[in-house]
Length: 73
Image (cartoon, rainbow, N blue to C red; front, top):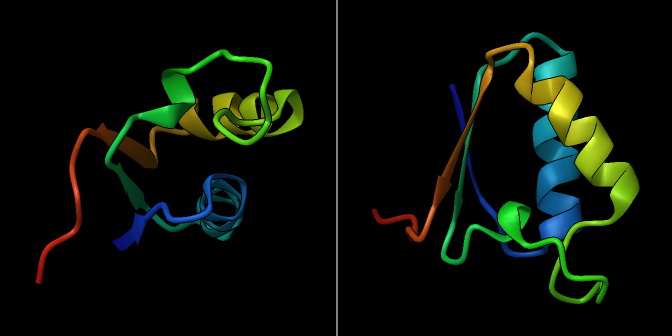
């Protein structure tokens, strides 16, 4: 299982989606749970394209979105 701590929201989600396309299971940790933010400001929310790709990835059952948490050693 791959574990991603989302630093750049778009790039972190893009990496997760690509890993899922390769058949991997992924956990995405984020301190804010930005995927739930539907703000139109792209600096604080995911783009509509990424949200659409994330929805399709979520339907695979291979992604776990964990909000309000930081990765620890």
